[in-house]
Image (cartoon, rainbow, N blue to C red; front, top):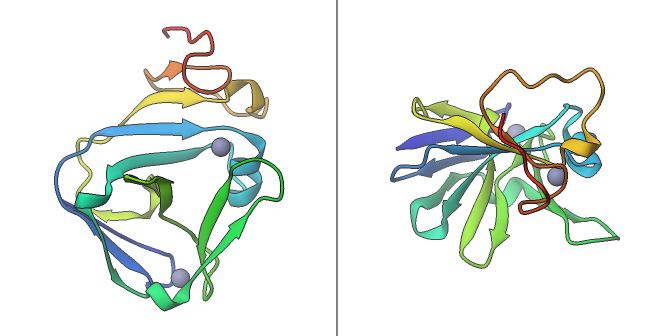
Length: 138
Ligand SMILES: [Zn+2]
Ligand SMILES: [Zn+2]
């Protein structure tokens, strides 16, 4: 089980069940949305993801081009879990406050968009674009 929350604590959630994979997306949209070189994401099925509090403080923004949506806390601005597809959620891994000891970076996607200053120090596989785009083992 993992628990997580935004920086102000208004929005809280729980992931019941095990998941260990982190995917870091370095696309320019994810970078701008967070101010980071890449966003570490946990994918969890809807069956094991639960909002605990603060759902009224969640706002969504859809990028005008492409299929990209972010959820964020209207109080503190933290990025929040959002729908990955109809069956699963994409959860920013930095929000986790309890559990998650088995999490590790397994994939970097859109590495072609990463800033020059970011260096990968983990064993994750590097994909220049999305999955299946000529990935290389590191
Ligand atoms: Zn907040
Ligand atoms: Zn991205």
